[in-house]
Image (tube, rainbow, N blue to C red; front, side, top):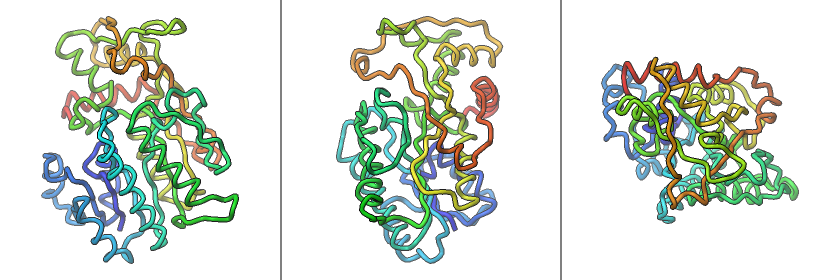
Length: 330
Protein backbone atom coordinates (compact mmCIF):
# COMPACT_ATOMS: atom_id res chain seq x y z
CA UNK A 1 0.00 0.00 0.00
CA UNK A 2 1.27 3.46 -0.96
CA UNK A 3 0.06 6.71 0.59
CA UNK A 4 -0.01 9.74 -1.73
CA UNK A 5 -0.73 13.11 -0.13
CA UNK A 6 -1.84 15.92 -2.42
CA UNK A 7 -3.34 13.16 -4.56
CA UNK A 8 -6.00 15.41 -6.11
CA UNK A 9 -3.38 17.94 -7.18
CA UNK A 10 -1.51 18.30 -10.44
CA UNK A 11 1.56 16.17 -9.78
CA UNK A 12 -0.28 13.95 -7.30
CA UNK A 13 -2.90 12.99 -9.85
CA UNK A 14 -0.27 12.09 -12.45
CA UNK A 15 1.67 9.99 -9.94
CA UNK A 16 -1.47 8.23 -8.71
CA UNK A 17 -2.60 7.55 -12.27
CA UNK A 18 0.71 5.81 -12.98
CA UNK A 19 0.51 3.62 -9.86
CA UNK A 20 -3.16 2.78 -9.36
CA UNK A 21 -3.09 -0.47 -11.34
CA UNK A 22 -0.13 -1.80 -9.35
CA UNK A 23 -0.73 -0.81 -5.73
CA UNK A 24 -3.45 -0.28 -3.20
CA UNK A 25 -3.40 3.48 -2.73
CA UNK A 26 -4.43 5.85 0.04
CA UNK A 27 -5.19 9.22 -1.58
CA UNK A 28 -5.00 12.13 0.88
CA UNK A 29 -6.29 15.55 -0.16
CA UNK A 30 -8.87 18.03 1.08
CA UNK A 31 -9.96 18.72 -2.52
CA UNK A 32 -10.76 15.18 -3.64
CA UNK A 33 -14.54 15.49 -3.37
CA UNK A 34 -14.57 18.81 -5.26
CA UNK A 35 -12.68 17.60 -8.31
CA UNK A 36 -14.81 16.15 -11.07
CA UNK A 37 -11.91 14.12 -12.41
CA UNK A 38 -11.84 12.19 -9.15
CA UNK A 39 -15.48 11.14 -9.50
CA UNK A 40 -14.48 9.39 -12.71
CA UNK A 41 -11.72 7.51 -10.89
CA UNK A 42 -13.98 6.62 -7.98
CA UNK A 43 -16.48 4.85 -10.21
CA UNK A 44 -14.35 3.39 -12.97
CA UNK A 45 -13.81 0.05 -11.30
CA UNK A 46 -10.72 0.99 -9.31
CA UNK A 47 -11.78 0.03 -5.81
CA UNK A 48 -8.20 -0.17 -4.54
CA UNK A 49 -8.13 3.55 -3.65
CA UNK A 50 -8.95 4.80 -0.14
CA UNK A 51 -9.87 8.50 0.02
CA UNK A 52 -8.99 10.64 3.05
CA UNK A 53 -8.95 14.33 3.81
CA UNK A 54 -5.94 15.72 5.66
CA UNK A 55 -7.68 15.93 9.02
CA UNK A 56 -8.73 12.27 8.93
CA UNK A 57 -5.32 11.10 7.77
CA UNK A 58 -3.59 11.57 11.14
CA UNK A 59 -5.44 8.79 12.94
CA UNK A 60 -5.88 6.61 9.85
CA UNK A 61 -2.14 6.50 9.25
CA UNK A 62 -1.38 5.70 12.87
CA UNK A 63 -3.83 2.77 12.93
CA UNK A 64 -2.76 1.39 9.55
CA UNK A 65 1.00 1.91 9.64
CA UNK A 66 1.89 -1.82 9.30
CA UNK A 67 0.16 -1.97 5.89
CA UNK A 68 2.02 0.99 4.39
CA UNK A 69 4.99 0.31 2.10
CA UNK A 70 5.82 3.88 1.13
CA UNK A 71 4.61 7.47 1.53
CA UNK A 72 4.78 9.96 -1.35
CA UNK A 73 4.13 13.33 0.29
CA UNK A 74 3.16 15.85 -2.40
CA UNK A 75 0.50 17.75 -0.47
CA UNK A 76 1.10 21.44 0.18
CA UNK A 77 -0.31 24.91 -0.16
CA UNK A 78 1.34 25.69 -3.50
CA UNK A 79 0.06 29.21 -4.15
CA UNK A 80 3.22 31.31 -4.42
CA UNK A 81 1.13 34.42 -3.71
CA UNK A 82 -0.16 33.08 -0.37
CA UNK A 83 0.62 35.55 2.43
CA UNK A 84 -1.16 33.86 5.34
CA UNK A 85 1.78 32.30 7.15
CA UNK A 86 -0.49 30.27 9.44
CA UNK A 87 -1.85 28.38 6.42
CA UNK A 88 1.64 27.68 5.08
CA UNK A 89 2.92 26.72 8.51
CA UNK A 90 0.06 24.25 9.06
CA UNK A 91 0.14 22.58 5.65
CA UNK A 92 3.71 22.95 4.41
CA UNK A 93 5.62 22.75 7.68
CA UNK A 94 3.66 21.09 10.47
CA UNK A 95 1.90 18.44 8.37
CA UNK A 96 5.18 17.66 6.60
CA UNK A 97 6.88 17.22 9.99
CA UNK A 98 4.06 14.87 11.03
CA UNK A 99 4.58 12.79 7.87
CA UNK A 100 8.35 12.72 8.42
CA UNK A 101 8.04 11.67 12.06
CA UNK A 102 5.37 9.08 11.21
CA UNK A 103 7.63 7.49 8.58
CA UNK A 104 10.61 7.64 10.94
CA UNK A 105 8.79 5.96 13.83
CA UNK A 106 7.28 3.26 11.61
CA UNK A 107 10.35 2.72 9.40
CA UNK A 108 8.50 3.61 6.19
CA UNK A 109 10.41 4.99 3.17
CA UNK A 110 9.41 8.53 2.23
CA UNK A 111 9.50 10.66 -0.91
CA UNK A 112 8.48 14.28 -0.35
CA UNK A 113 8.04 17.34 -2.55
CA UNK A 114 10.31 20.27 -2.00
CA UNK A 115 10.60 23.14 -4.47
CA UNK A 116 13.11 25.16 -6.45
CA UNK A 117 11.46 28.16 -4.75
CA UNK A 118 13.88 27.57 -1.84
CA UNK A 119 16.69 29.00 -4.00
CA UNK A 120 15.24 32.48 -4.33
CA UNK A 121 16.86 34.42 -7.16
CA UNK A 122 19.64 31.87 -7.65
CA UNK A 123 22.39 34.11 -6.31
CA UNK A 124 23.82 31.11 -4.47
CA UNK A 125 23.32 28.74 -7.40
CA UNK A 126 20.84 25.87 -7.50
CA UNK A 127 22.81 23.27 -5.59
CA UNK A 128 21.02 20.32 -3.97
CA UNK A 129 23.91 19.69 -1.58
CA UNK A 130 22.29 18.45 1.65
CA UNK A 131 25.37 18.21 3.85
CA UNK A 132 24.41 19.83 7.19
CA UNK A 133 27.66 21.80 7.04
CA UNK A 134 26.65 23.36 3.73
CA UNK A 135 25.90 27.07 4.00
CA UNK A 136 22.10 27.24 3.87
CA UNK A 137 22.09 30.89 2.87
CA UNK A 138 19.24 30.79 0.35
CA UNK A 139 16.80 33.68 0.37
CA UNK A 140 13.36 32.58 -0.92
CA UNK A 141 11.41 35.31 -2.67
CA UNK A 142 8.00 34.48 -1.19
CA UNK A 143 6.46 32.83 1.84
CA UNK A 144 5.70 29.62 -0.06
CA UNK A 145 9.41 29.26 -0.84
CA UNK A 146 10.23 30.09 2.77
CA UNK A 147 7.97 27.29 4.03
CA UNK A 148 9.68 24.75 1.73
CA UNK A 149 13.11 26.05 2.70
CA UNK A 150 12.40 25.77 6.41
CA UNK A 151 11.22 22.17 6.10
CA UNK A 152 14.30 21.14 4.09
CA UNK A 153 16.52 22.88 6.62
CA UNK A 154 14.71 21.19 9.53
CA UNK A 155 15.23 17.81 7.88
CA UNK A 156 18.92 18.26 7.16
CA UNK A 157 20.11 20.26 10.14
CA UNK A 158 17.77 19.12 12.92
CA UNK A 159 16.93 15.56 11.93
CA UNK A 160 19.94 14.13 10.10
CA UNK A 161 22.90 16.16 11.27
CA UNK A 162 25.59 13.71 10.18
CA UNK A 163 28.34 15.80 11.75
CA UNK A 164 27.13 14.73 15.19
CA UNK A 165 25.97 11.27 14.20
CA UNK A 166 22.31 12.21 14.57
CA UNK A 167 19.93 10.66 12.07
CA UNK A 168 16.29 10.82 13.11
CA UNK A 169 14.94 9.88 9.69
CA UNK A 170 12.94 7.33 7.71
CA UNK A 171 14.99 4.31 6.58
CA UNK A 172 15.09 5.73 3.04
CA UNK A 173 14.00 9.22 2.07
CA UNK A 174 14.23 11.63 -0.82
CA UNK A 175 13.20 15.28 -1.01
CA UNK A 176 12.59 16.37 -4.61
CA UNK A 177 13.00 20.04 -5.50
CA UNK A 178 10.62 20.51 -8.41
CA UNK A 179 11.44 23.24 -10.90
CA UNK A 180 8.80 24.61 -13.35
CA UNK A 181 6.48 21.67 -13.98
CA UNK A 182 3.89 21.64 -16.78
CA UNK A 183 1.59 19.02 -18.27
CA UNK A 184 -1.85 17.37 -18.20
CA UNK A 185 -4.33 17.77 -15.33
CA UNK A 186 -3.30 21.18 -14.05
CA UNK A 187 -6.36 23.18 -15.15
CA UNK A 188 -7.80 23.19 -11.62
CA UNK A 189 -4.78 25.19 -10.40
CA UNK A 190 -6.20 28.33 -12.01
CA UNK A 191 -3.71 31.20 -11.81
CA UNK A 192 -1.07 28.83 -10.40
CA UNK A 193 -1.16 26.60 -13.50
CA UNK A 194 1.96 26.58 -15.66
CA UNK A 195 2.71 29.32 -18.16
CA UNK A 196 2.30 26.71 -20.91
CA UNK A 197 -1.35 26.29 -19.92
CA UNK A 198 -1.88 30.06 -19.72
CA UNK A 199 -0.15 30.70 -23.06
CA UNK A 200 -2.33 28.06 -24.68
CA UNK A 201 -5.48 29.78 -23.45
CA UNK A 202 -4.26 33.26 -24.38
CA UNK A 203 -3.49 32.14 -27.91
CA UNK A 204 -6.80 30.33 -28.32
CA UNK A 205 -8.71 33.39 -27.09
CA UNK A 206 -6.74 36.26 -28.66
CA UNK A 207 -4.39 34.79 -31.25
CA UNK A 208 -1.40 36.18 -29.37
CA UNK A 209 0.54 35.92 -26.14
CA UNK A 210 1.87 38.62 -23.81
CA UNK A 211 5.19 38.08 -22.03
CA UNK A 212 6.69 40.11 -19.23
CA UNK A 213 9.10 42.79 -20.40
CA UNK A 214 12.58 42.63 -18.92
CA UNK A 215 13.45 45.26 -16.32
CA UNK A 216 17.12 44.31 -16.15
CA UNK A 217 19.81 45.64 -18.48
CA UNK A 218 21.42 42.23 -18.92
CA UNK A 219 18.26 40.59 -20.27
CA UNK A 220 16.21 41.25 -23.39
CA UNK A 221 12.40 41.11 -23.33
CA UNK A 222 11.14 37.54 -23.12
CA UNK A 223 14.65 36.16 -22.60
CA UNK A 224 14.05 35.44 -18.91
CA UNK A 225 14.86 31.75 -18.43
CA UNK A 226 13.33 28.85 -16.51
CA UNK A 227 14.01 25.15 -16.19
CA UNK A 228 10.70 23.80 -17.54
CA UNK A 229 10.07 20.10 -16.86
CA UNK A 230 7.27 17.93 -18.25
CA UNK A 231 5.20 16.18 -15.58
CA UNK A 232 5.89 12.76 -17.16
CA UNK A 233 9.55 13.24 -16.19
CA UNK A 234 8.54 13.90 -12.58
CA UNK A 235 6.61 10.63 -12.57
CA UNK A 236 9.58 8.78 -14.10
CA UNK A 237 11.95 10.00 -11.39
CA UNK A 238 9.51 9.04 -8.64
CA UNK A 239 9.28 5.57 -10.20
CA UNK A 240 13.09 5.44 -10.18
CA UNK A 241 13.10 6.02 -6.43
CA UNK A 242 10.26 3.55 -5.85
CA UNK A 243 11.84 0.70 -7.77
CA UNK A 244 15.07 0.40 -5.77
CA UNK A 245 16.69 1.65 -2.60
CA UNK A 246 18.49 4.74 -3.86
CA UNK A 247 20.54 6.94 -1.52
CA UNK A 248 18.61 9.24 0.79
CA UNK A 249 18.90 12.98 0.32
CA UNK A 250 17.56 16.09 -1.38
CA UNK A 251 17.56 16.02 -5.19
CA UNK A 252 16.88 18.71 -7.77
CA UNK A 253 14.24 17.76 -10.29
CA UNK A 254 14.44 19.85 -13.42
CA UNK A 255 15.93 19.13 -16.85
CA UNK A 256 19.21 20.89 -16.18
CA UNK A 257 18.61 23.07 -19.24
CA UNK A 258 17.04 26.53 -18.88
CA UNK A 259 14.93 27.85 -21.76
CA UNK A 260 13.53 31.31 -22.44
CA UNK A 261 9.91 32.37 -22.32
CA UNK A 262 10.29 33.34 -25.97
CA UNK A 263 11.27 29.73 -26.73
CA UNK A 264 8.27 28.45 -24.82
CA UNK A 265 5.80 30.81 -26.51
CA UNK A 266 7.14 29.96 -29.97
CA UNK A 267 6.79 26.25 -29.21
CA UNK A 268 3.12 26.70 -28.22
CA UNK A 269 2.40 28.63 -31.44
CA UNK A 270 4.16 25.94 -33.45
CA UNK A 271 2.21 23.13 -31.77
CA UNK A 272 -1.06 24.92 -32.51
CA UNK A 273 -0.06 25.66 -36.10
CA UNK A 274 -0.60 29.39 -35.53
CA UNK A 275 1.63 32.23 -36.68
CA UNK A 276 3.74 33.72 -33.88
CA UNK A 277 2.28 36.83 -32.26
CA UNK A 278 4.31 37.80 -29.19
CA UNK A 279 4.10 41.15 -27.40
CA UNK A 280 5.52 42.40 -24.11
CA UNK A 281 3.98 44.06 -21.06
CA UNK A 282 5.54 45.48 -17.90
CA UNK A 283 6.06 43.03 -15.06
CA UNK A 284 3.53 43.98 -12.35
CA UNK A 285 5.01 46.27 -9.72
CA UNK A 286 4.02 43.95 -6.87
CA UNK A 287 6.27 41.13 -8.15
CA UNK A 288 8.86 43.07 -10.13
CA UNK A 289 11.55 43.14 -7.46
CA UNK A 290 11.15 39.46 -6.59
CA UNK A 291 10.87 38.20 -10.17
CA UNK A 292 13.37 35.49 -11.09
CA UNK A 293 15.31 35.96 -14.32
CA UNK A 294 16.93 32.54 -14.40
CA UNK A 295 16.48 29.09 -12.88
CA UNK A 296 18.36 25.95 -13.88
CA UNK A 297 18.62 22.77 -11.86
CA UNK A 298 22.02 21.30 -11.13
CA UNK A 299 21.31 17.65 -11.97
CA UNK A 300 24.65 15.93 -11.34
CA UNK A 301 23.50 14.44 -8.04
CA UNK A 302 20.52 12.56 -9.53
CA UNK A 303 22.57 11.41 -12.52
CA UNK A 304 25.34 10.35 -10.16
CA UNK A 305 23.16 7.68 -8.55
CA UNK A 306 22.29 6.15 -11.90
CA UNK A 307 19.32 8.04 -13.31
CA UNK A 308 20.01 8.03 -17.04
CA UNK A 309 16.58 8.53 -18.63
CA UNK A 310 16.59 11.52 -20.97
CA UNK A 311 14.35 14.40 -19.93
CA UNK A 312 11.67 15.50 -22.37
CA UNK A 313 12.83 18.30 -24.65
CA UNK A 314 10.71 21.45 -24.26
CA UNK A 315 9.29 21.35 -27.79
CA UNK A 316 8.38 17.66 -27.46
CA UNK A 317 6.73 18.14 -24.08
CA UNK A 318 4.69 21.08 -25.36
CA UNK A 319 3.58 19.09 -28.40
CA UNK A 320 2.36 16.28 -26.13
CA UNK A 321 0.67 18.69 -23.74
CA UNK A 322 -1.04 20.77 -26.43
CA UNK A 323 -2.38 17.59 -28.03
CA UNK A 324 -3.80 16.60 -24.63
CA UNK A 325 -5.34 20.05 -24.11
CA UNK A 326 -6.92 20.02 -27.55
CA UNK A 327 -8.51 16.63 -26.79
CA UNK A 328 -9.45 16.98 -23.11
CA UNK A 329 -8.63 20.51 -21.86
CA UNK A 330 -7.67 19.37 -18.34
